[in-house]
Length: 154
Picture 1 (cartoon, rainbow, N blue to C red):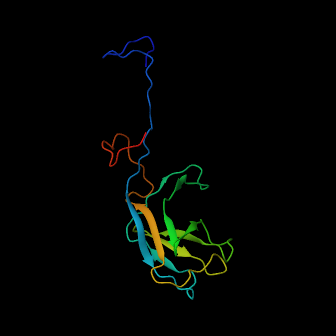
Picture 2: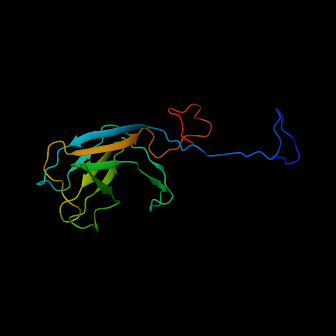
Picture 3: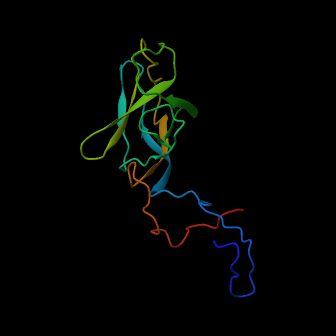
C-alpha cells in the first residue's frame, strides 16, 4: 500500500491487512471408525482405513523431511497410541503404530510384534481411528476456498 494515498469510502492510511487468518485443508473428518478387533496372538496386526486417501497437513516441526503430518488418531480400548515412522528401534511394550500407503491411496495402520512395539490386546472392535481423508498431502490452491463450512471463532 502507498502510505501517502488515501483509500475510498472514508478509509485512510494506515490500514491493517491480515493474511493467512484461516487454516484450511481439503478433506472430510471421520470420527471413531471401528478398524477391527485386536488379537494378542497375532504379531504385526494391521487394519486398512475405510476411506482414503488419508489427508495430511503442513507441519514443519513434525520431525520428518516431508514437512507434513497426519491428523490420524488411533485408539486401542480407548487409549491413544502414538504414530511412529518405524517400529524397528522401539521397545516391546511401546503403544505405537506405523502407517503404510498402497498405490491406490489406501492407508493402513500396523502394530508391533511384542518385541518391536506392543501387540494389540485381545478385544472385540477395540481398535478405532479418527482421521481426515480426501486430499493426501495436497494443500488447497490459492483462491479456491470461497465459503467456509463453519464460522471461524476470532
